Length: 371
Image (cartoon, rainbow, N blue to C red):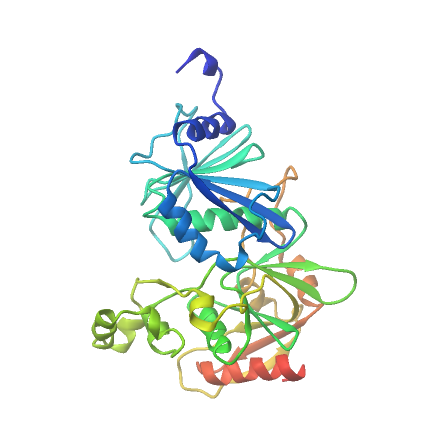
């Protein structure tokens, strides 16, 4: 290590060295509401992939001042510029899962997260944001890193984080949540086929404005869907090749739905341009609490204070990619979520799984304001 870095190197030191070692040759700017994110990389192919991915959120002014800069450094190895002052800490798997995917290390001015399976490193803090490794091969992780910077910005401005998809129709927005495997994204795409506008796929940020309805903000992440979802929705079938379609259709139904294979369903490609926005009033939170038992579907409004058993389906911890501005930050508790949801309608869908009936109920609510 050079004498310049006889002190412990900071996140800022690592990022500065990465930008000098792998200087940017291209980039783009994203306009995400009131936030402008500049993306820079030494991999032109990555820029083009992200240009298509974020097409509907590209800033018209390429020279617009950026609030946040994110750089991605394509590199054959996963080594960081300087030695680290300690070992990475392991992030334990979520309940029900066993595979360890992430490790992290906090420095005085930020955090470094390492993805075990890909070797990618992500560095972020007040002094900057950078990804390094095989970025092109892991472009979905780069997309998530960019979106996490937007998420962090919104959380630092007082939003609650919800584990939900979101759509809007007739000026009315709804979030769609559900316990694991309930199909919130599948329901959102059923609603897209019925003419709604997409707001978010897997995360919503909810903000109280004045005394009225909350506002929900989406994340500019395209839906990632499994082959079963694609092949059972005419608007999505085009993303599966003929070769894959024949192979998948030959599988037993449950095996098809459980495949660990994902496709990006680009909203503009599948449904047309102008069908993806990042802000809507949240007139309701719909929670899927159904099962594949063949029972009739049940749709009813419930009280969030009385049905706290439903709240964990929507509550979401901020995770490793969020470092709060405020010291001693703690994720909002159940009371905070119940208070927020008391300002909108909370709708439980139970009984047997029926996406068509659920989509009709959601659409009826957005069109008429009643169930």
